[in-house]
Image 1: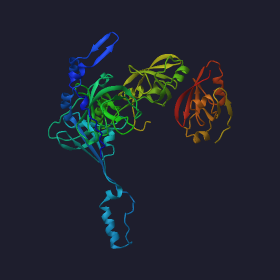
Image 2: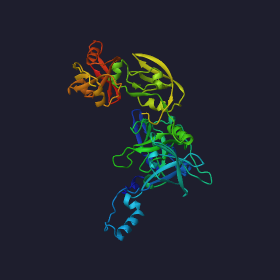
Image 3: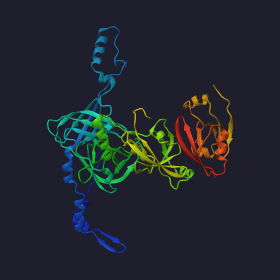
Length: 485
């Protein structure tokens, strides 16, 4: 059921000329009068009728159904005397109605768009994820059963295929890199099952990270996007697809003017891989990275926080062959700047396996260039000794040597090295940076530590205003900067 709210605008809808001729804007230099000619120009700029007529035939409604599965071992809703004819009858009756025992089939509604006259259709992965049947309906009323060519959950893109006796209407991708904030866009889709709905707005922002995946680079728009718009296209004024509507920010489930679309340039590459291979092939560098914070930048002697800080390097990886090491900051990759940490995964993923690339890194305050050959990302990538305990001044922690028993207890690799934190002063500097018992300090700056005294010595050289610690927390390595002065 829809809850509809209408408000009257009849008292405010005067002819354009009348409205604009009475609107006066005052500036310091004088008076600026908006004329009917100005209004006519604005009206032409926001008239989407021709554009909508051009692109809507290629935008489709998508319905995906997941059949109910019989609930194994679920008792029948009514009992009958054991061994009686009624028991046998009821058993057969409910076996023929599994949907009543395992729940009703679930249906999801979304949108999509045809990108090839042979019937290839792009949508969101979450629209058809887990579906047993996918149906497509065109604006002209034709219905098709669709097959799933391939999906990519990491970018939330899916490619479908339908069979038609004649060529289907289709739309083409544009260059999303050319989009500018403030540029007009048009969204078309199937909100709440209302097919063929057109909404207009502008590009509100670019490069949004909404923490939905490792390759987030969303276009933000104020064009109304609601449930059911998922998978639908966002067009520029030339009728080219510049984004795929995928998510909304909403406290109430409806549009509040904050929608997100996957950039067309990312979708194009994913669709090409799905069409050719049925899956997406991505490059692999073999590093664990983290953001460069203000504190970390200060500890490394950087002028500003930028780039991707290498926390660890996988053995025998392209990064290992390039001799990258923990503490390096990657600021350039294959000719592109790495301004922030999330830039690097997208750049590496888009690199074909086998390609040689150059990276610009900062190491020990100096800029260097290293080269390596990118590999193909694989689907899965991703007895007690004497213990000495010391309280380390300056950090507010108590440390002990790392033993085999401690490695097992902390779920660390057998070859893990470092010094384990056994206690943290809640009012100390380490606690304020989120360190906690069980964390393992592997390095202080570029000094590898293996016993508590190594940490104390590294911090007592009198040269450090800040300490950059490499921390291993249950196998997850990160740098933490702690101000000492």
